Length: 56
Image 1 (tube, one colour):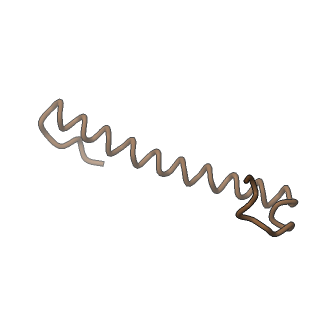
Image 2 (cartoon, rainbow, N blue to C red):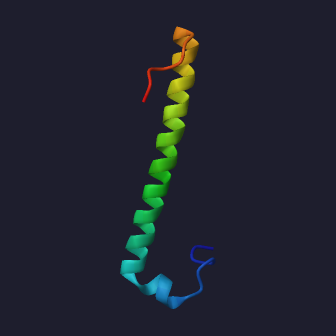
């Protein structure tokens, strides 16, 4: 099933395209993880100290 979504040989055979896709995926997942981490930390802070976290 790997590669079933991309039928173009240009996309599957080109190492530069693969590297760019990987870099984009890492950046997107990293950004999402950062947002989730910040929100979770904020929830924990409010739960522990019963006040909003310090300003950004």
